[in-house]
Image (tube, rainbow, N blue to C red; front, side):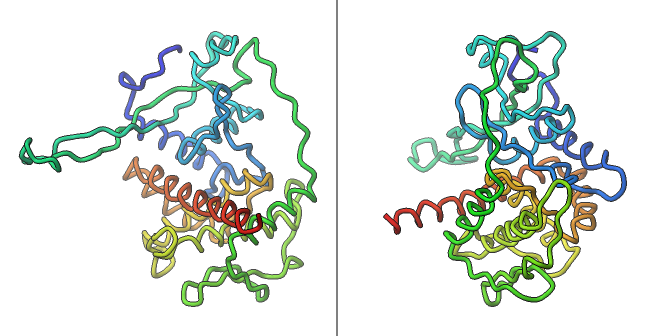
Length: 306
């Protein structure tokens, strides 16, 4: 499938949303975000040609594809990009959908063409199709040693410290309190490890979720928090926090920890996604914005230390 444009294909929003819905509903038992099953540590998807990490909803689309087919490299590229690398996509392989945006200048409705402010910038989505490194011949996967578990935890601890978020240890429940702008976390001893996730990974995976909530205030990323469990804004914020935490954990090489209320609000979110094919794009974009904000604090901390 050499063609890269999605012009002749179904709406790219519907295509990617349907793929994510199918992956959530395909889990036996309670609904769960597919990249958080069984203590998995998904690799952050990266373009094999440019070396750039994918962002936002593209991460989710490629994670779903990788989990569905067992791809472990995290490397993807378009048909043309693989060809430029000297590789050949094998005949019969299916591509994964991603989306990119371009900004266009458009005349405002009813505006005077002579008015210098008569145009506005709009974002246009365009779908592309990419293949994993496991689907091509003629490409040698780069060898890489897995990071040491102790180094991963140290990196996670340093990442949180660089944000200067106030984290209070104690109690039985993890939460972010907007009234005091604090994150409350149970002691590490209250967390349990599994075959795929250590006790400390469970702690930092949960802390990553609360750290994304911490970015919500007006002075940071300006997201509206829901007033009560079950309302649309609450569920949307929880999905943003879970998604942002998954992005963070993938970056740090630790397994994400599903929130205790995960199944209940994911069930609600499924209904939202089925009614609005752009909802998951918005949530993923806000999750990416939160992670980008937190990443910016890392750079600021390094500058202060220099």
